[in-house]
Length: 107
Length: 113
Image (tube, rainbow over all chains, first blue to last red; front, side, top):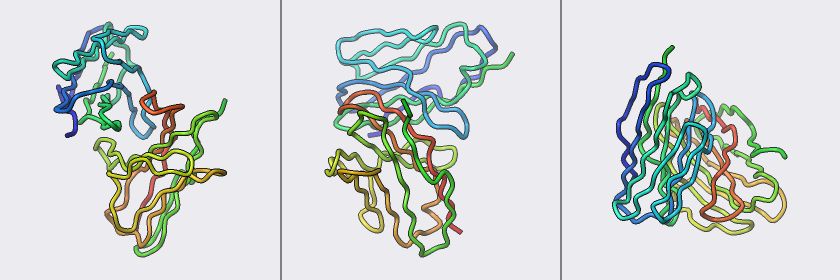
């Protein structure tokens, strides 16, 4: 029932790009994306509603394929501040968070 | 506009004691969610409440755990007779309506000795 994220971990140098995938076994109303830094609370990044829309937030964007029940988060030209664990949240009748992807960006 | 507030930030309890965790949602938010996070793990849904109502408690253990969100005052997550396995970070989040983005509080780190 928990959405599966891939990859589990990513290591990048500043300026490199990354893609994080989220796959659900249940039909989704929407997908949420959050970032959590170690010892801190998760921070909301964006929400994608049905309709296959793509959203952007600075150099972070995401897509949602409702037919495949999948979402992808795209991080371009990564910055040191992007480091953290990224969680997708699958909104079925409640928000179930994915398995998480740990991203580390080095100078 | 103050964010989601949780207190205490750290709580130490001995086995068998009770733990009370408080959450004040953002102004204008009437939907509150509680999550538990074990070290190096993800967020596990526990319970979803609206003012005076429990909407979904499917993620909450049936024994020892209870939650409320009264008409006045903060939401409270109560754990009775705590055991070592209850040690975790407990986050609450709030949203203006169901399905909207959720804003998280700083969490309460519960340690059971």
